[in-house]
Image (tube, rainbow, N blue to C red; front, top):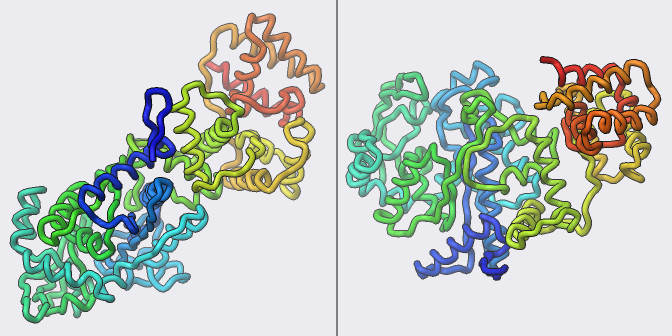
Length: 535
């Protein structure tokens, strides 16, 4: 479970996942519950295109499952699709005809792409496809099927029996007063087929049904009129759903969930659900951790409704599964601003982590080394490779792909890497990375390196190199002259090479610069260098 490194006690593999797993175990022991199987859960949104934030819920839950198993406990990961939710708005880029289905359960809306049984099956399917590509194992549960199968019925009945108490408590805890007047249950209107628009105003316990009026509701930023129908529904037949303020509690009990993380955007719902499962359903709520959100570069929350969705599919078009897993497992605290170019940073960071794991890069602090090695193992789903892969900067591969012949890019890049003495032969992993680089070039062309902060002597050295490249095309002479220019300007040659790599490639290192400058094309190199010294 834990070990000692110096004066530090290290839990499991030393990561935040291990600390969370140990807290879950300690809590379960204190509650006296069975530890034969510890279930962790993540809710899968089914109302819009999944993004890296929604994927992170599931991946991190799976990470906790792995950490529990590493501590010696049997664990299971439940991926629960919220497919009974009503469509609140049409996501950016979706067809306008979906407006006709606003407030209808997403499991009852046609798939706009005509490849799944429903809208929700398509959206949750995209997330499940991402989990499959990451080789994450899960047990899928549909919200709609859970309601129809009756596994939530006992909780639904108990919640409705105590609806007045729950309504007062919701007002007290989060200031939302509507459930003092209506039941925390949303029927699907028998007449118009919409959810959220019908208010359930009376529960008849003996008949296990609610009475409702379809009066309309504010959905997102717009009011949607109800159809005026008045009806009744048996709450055990799957023809409605609990409010989010109580639904988590019902499924936590039904599925015996011991851990679920949450984002701050649903903190109020989690707080109420914890109280409901503890006090009304008489079962201890799951252990939680709260994580921060992923933001775009402008600082806005990544959201399907805002139209700034950064999908897992986009990440995996340009980056490896390991780079995406590193994004998820690197840390749990703090918001992170993401853009497509961050994929390349995480690929470089994964390569460095692999070098640390295999001892190619030294880390003096034993506790830090243990943590980084543990992180590498979790990123590889506790099945790390037996040897490191070939590490070539993805930025270099993208640059090579940008001037490779379109009809023969893969072979061209491999031959250049052999020429630069960076590889002896290709591997399957390198071919995968080359294809990711080709995808990048096809979609974005090239990477523009960032503007560097240079001293005057560094500016002077770059000016000298520009003058030299205007009259010289021999790669060996260019290579030699870079050394001479550095020395004439009192710059350590390795430092000058590093500056040039950053200016040309956007990376700290790369192939021999003389041959690479010629292959890349001197006009393009001159363009990049001139940008670095422009005022």
